[in-house]
Image 1 (cartoon, rainbow, N blue to C red):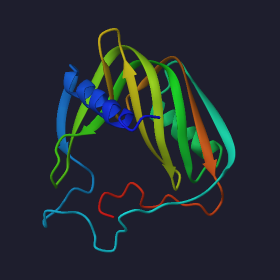
Image 2: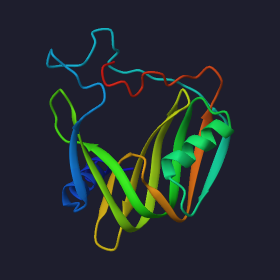
Image 3: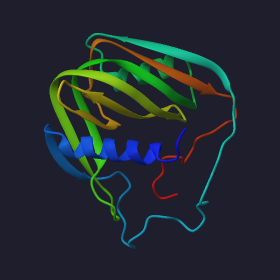
Length: 181
């Protein structure tokens, strides 16, 4: 894959967020109480990796009217998944609710986008971290695309299919999404 592809992809996704026309609400990001100007703890490694194979792949199908985040939570609980990679997701939506980062200095602020109407669900990715869902989605209508961190209130239209790669026992993603670590 060309080295320029990730930069172009990030620019396109960023442009989609700016172009969005849904309701918008700004809120401080979780864990963004920062009195020092930086959230990074000195003990946090610059790069941290976890190596693991998949013990199994779980394919989840959510039916019409299901809340996407709630459905994923139920599947993770039902399958007793502790840590996993969300590998893919497709389907369609009748409503969405996502948030994205709205600044580049601490404390972090989030902007929330919420709207109803037909959307194609183009991708779901992220992780299951100690049983907790950290998912991002990309979706589009006939005029624009948008993406962000999945919030409650994203509703499945026809169906949604999400694929999870379950990590080996002992592989932990703890603190992977801790902004202060």
